[in-house]
Figure 1 (cartoon, helix red, strand yellow):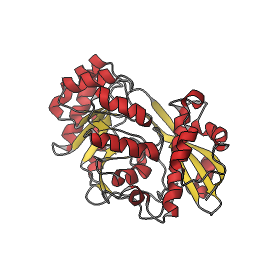
Figure 2: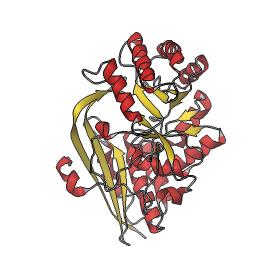
Figure 3: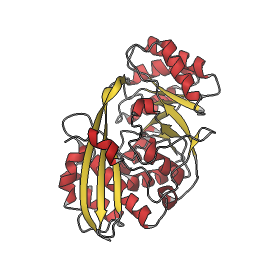
Figure 4: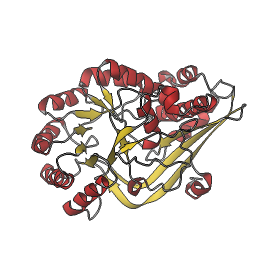
Length: 364
């Protein structure tokens, strides 16, 4: 089998209402798609999150395309190391995001060629995974009552876990928000806190000590992603475990994160870290160090990866009120009655943009 074509498309649409986390505000949503065609009629689809700013990782695809044409798409290891050349392409950032999407498309081809769902092709450790609902963003006009109502609405979906944002307002105000969320969901529901790197080390320790009584399940990205020592200190200062890794890239970055920060929960993001090839290596490394994976990012691809590995903990799940993608995909991931999600039982990863619906959002 040979690769005959590579192209990328970027889609963008305006949100009905802007949402904010600890550091950033999002008024639009973006989706980038890489399509890899082969001489045997199999097309692989890679997805990626949109990058803010004038430069997008999709801009890298034409530069990487020349390294792909004529290659056997089943040889993902050869292709990955052909593309990832730190001296020439960059170790992290936009280039690695582009490689991630290409790599996902290659694994889509591999699973389709084997006529297997991606999760089974990668290992098939389980057929369902618990989910938490990612929400609790800052929004204009959202008070404590509205936050509480939002958290309670997620329980109606059957989930046993929810997540909320912290870090954008003074600590005392966020403490009240956490208290309101805990009272809304009750004591038996996991409540995750996500700061999106908004704190300094001392601020993170001050905050987490004040909310320990509300029994958070984890404290996600309290400080900047390269502050391994800071994450270690925060973990030592509190009984609440630190979770991080959504901004980490490649097995080398996760090696350092595991060893130096001592965090127990890794939020590996297949769209950022180097694709499925790197995700599986990091999952194995994490398992050897008794760490668990709770991936960051949209649930579409992550559900297959979480069901492929043994040391998966839980799946991040965005309700459509935040993603606003509706019928943009061929398959939408629905929750099971027990608050879990199951991967598609079709060859490949199973999540493909609907071109008729998406065309109006295409960035020309």
